[in-house]
Image 1 (spheres, rainbow, N blue to C red):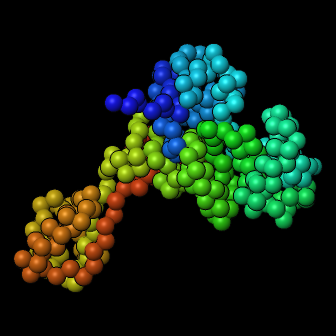
Image 2: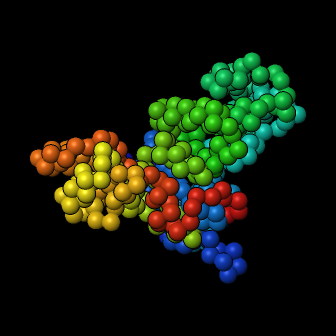
Length: 319
């Protein structure tokens, strides 16, 4: 029997306080290698504080963190060699060109001149920055600056990449371009820990999601597993007249109180599976109740966010 694969990130009992204010309390996480793991949470939930600790930029008060088996507290240099970090705001030098920013990063990582040149050329190509490579970064768009920032974080070939709200402030096209880059990284086997204020982003990119609220993990699972935790899933049916609507309401006891006579619609609580839809339509067919329109509404991550944290999604500005 082969041993269990080593997790990319293992966090146990992690805690952090600032004075009397507890920012993180007993955080447990296990992130499998080669996956995208997303942290969601309202303003002040502790997402950025957690990322700073994992990236060795801040020390926890208690708990244990291991990155590919290396203890973060005892072996911080070994951990730093395995990670890349991209924050909410692009950490690039606007006076330097794109090429110069990347080569500076290579020198700081002691990659050697030849390897630095090779990786710089490869990353400029990968992130579609070749045409802008010799222009000062001050003239780059927000999306170009963010792509360059991500490229710089990959110069050292990290095994795990921390992306702390990397698409904040980007327009929809630039955001989707960065999504494509993140998907490519994951497809190549990189492990990615992503914090984001965009619920659609987590839904699109993450293999697993942890919801952080008040410094605690309140739920964890795949996007589909989390959606099942939120109420509100239903099948919406529209009928030709009030007689058919009333007959349908009598036929479905779970739809009591879910009838809208003005819109001629009936909401039937449901997870929206194909089996449930078929059963409902078969029931109406047997009773000769015609359905004009059917739509399935399932909870999204916004519903999950509100149900689990009690807050609408907001931009995180501090912790």
